[in-house]
Length: 154
Image 1 (tube, rainbow, N blue to C red):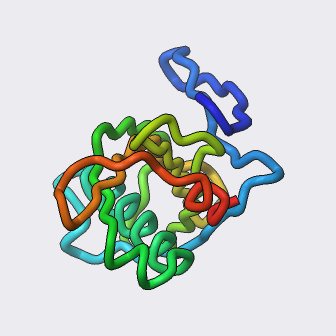
Image 2: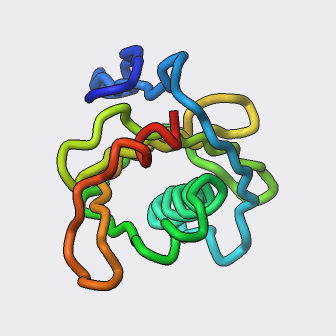
């Protein structure tokens, strides 16, 4: 993966999960999440799909906090691919801390975004790598990500 530092950690089955960490030069945007009773599944912890929802929520918040109004009016992002690694269950009453950052490269209309969600103990609960595609709202067609948009998140 381009634009990230990672460490390998084995899980209970011996599989290795690359723990996402932002490169030192990359801007990081943070947000906290409080699981709601409706987020808890039959296993007593936050449902997997909620982590994906949080990843989308923080991506949108990051975009709206940095992009000028003109860019927000002209462009939209759509998810092309999500990769999620789950590691530590979150339960009701815990606060999740999410961090997101983007790749330093945008080949064509595609742009990678990384999200790491940690539990209150700092242990990684889930991490997400998403490939987003920039869409020009007026045409509904993909548009090459402009260099200044990449720099906006640096």
